[in-house]
Length: 470
Ligand SMILES: *[C@@H]1O[C@H](CO)[C@@H](O)[C@H](O)[C@H]1NC(C)=O
Ligand SMILES: *[C@@H]1O[C@H](CO)[C@@H](O)[C@H](O)[C@H]1NC(C)=O
Ligand SMILES: *[C@@H]1O[C@H](CO)[C@@H](O)[C@H](O)[C@H]1NC(C)=O
Ligand SMILES: *[C@@H]1O[C@H](CO)[C@@H](O)[C@H](O)[C@H]1NC(C)=O
Ligand SMILES: *[C@@H]1O[C@H](CO)[C@@H](O)[C@H](O)[C@H]1NC(C)=O
Ligand SMILES: *[C@@H]1O[C@H](CO)[C@@H](O)[C@H](O)[C@H]1NC(C)=O
Ligand SMILES: *[C@@H]1O[C@H](CO)[C@@H](O)[C@H](O)[C@H]1NC(C)=O
Ligand SMILES: *[C@@H]1O[C@H](CO)[C@@H](O)[C@H](O)[C@H]1NC(C)=O
Image 1 (cartoon, rainbow, N blue to C red):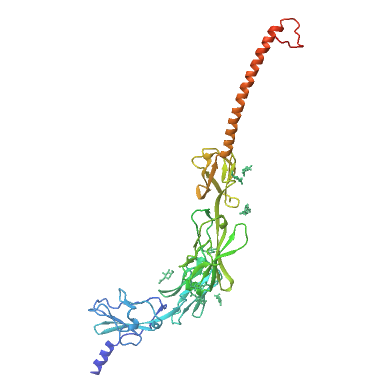
Image 2 (image 1 turned 135 degrees about the vertical axis):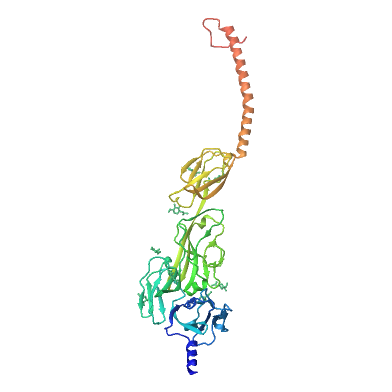
């Protein structure tokens, strides 16, 4: 009797002599506790327990494929993988303990134990570009002494220095290519566990390589500026952001004028001086710090600086150069016959590689003289030269922007013509009768002379001394 009871106990009591299997996990991550395949039978009972709990966390019988225990703490986070391993996601702080997997077949029970060990890495690190990065991966003391090292997102890895259960890498000055997921790999036997830390680098995207070209009265351009990675405003604020601005340095000037300042509590760009300026106010969302401008004039030529100020006097800034094309004429409204010079200008000499192309109005079918790479001279203009003279700024075959000038050529003033006409008419009126009279007079005289010659000059010595009346 006693013997059979002992035999029964021996059969019912789980066979488990082994040490618990070591499993690594990260809070917030997921973990799989692999079931040791024991029997090939499908008629298998699998029960998973936590610690000394009597009630299973999750179980499977030949009739019920999956049944969860009633513990609220676990319920939504547990599931079976296809081979009846236990899958936990997300892992919480109180999960680091002993798990038991019991497999029943008839009266035989096999139990496997698993001990969960914590791997601690920072979940997210946000740093200003150029800062020093130090990452530590801490592995809860365990019996297996795994090999631990850090892997960086791209490029070659750094040396991981280990001291006891802490494994650290240091990077003296971080750049954008350090951003991304850094992985602490914990490896022992054939098992590998990865704990990840998301490293966000606070930096501004590079400035556009070329200036922004626009023209007077053309559609207002947008001034680009953005954070180089997706960083939320609370994170930025937590990283010591203290202010920001969009400021302006006019062409050929060194004075820096703030146009917009960053209101951190909204967050938004707001007019610095309380009055509407060239750059428009904007509520900020996500990483985009760009602003729209208003109607462009030559006064807006210059350099615009987008900057963010951080604690400790650190500043991130990017510059955008705005070039405004304009057609200037020596005289926009002139009379026919005069010379008009047109100049297409950025307010400073044309940068190398850029050229100006002129498009005259359709009515102007004349030759014009290019006196300078960016200037035209139109000698003796006519009314046909009136209209829009367009100049295009080109880089190779691409038109960067174009500007127009409306030229008005007037006929010579009407008064002058009238004067000429009236004067001419009067002249003719007076002159013609006078001429006629003179001609008539001359003719008469000639007739008289001939008559006299006929009377007195048939002698050899004509006497010119006196007149004789007939
Ligand atoms: C990382 O960025 C720095 C400067 O931004 C550059 O000098 C370096 O070559 C980059 N390294 C890799 C692996 O891309
Ligand atoms: C990493 O830098 C920290 C200070 O930032 C220092 O305490 C630590 O000793 C350094 N570790 C290594 C491996 O250089
Ligand atoms: C851990 O990360 C490394 C590097 O990305 C990868 O090669 C490896 O497959 C990962 N291992 C696991 C178990 O996710
Ligand atoms: C920033 O914006 C908030 C809300 O729009 C406003 O109450 C506050 O006065 C602004 N701060 C400054 C410095 O303009
Ligand atoms: C940003 O941080 C400061 C303290 O550094 C705090 O006073 C302010 O309320 C924070 N603003 C936002 C929008 O979180
Ligand atoms: C432009 O033309 C108008 C009319 O012909 C003339 O009165 C004015 O003096 C001219 N201005 C210049 C700068 O040549
Ligand atoms: C136009 O340009 C020519 C050549 O540079 C110059 O001689 C002339 O004075 C200019 N005329 C005007 C009206 O500016
Ligand atoms: C700016 O300076 C350049 C020479 O550096 C000069 O040619 C140009 O006329 C100046 N522009 C203005 C608007 O003063």
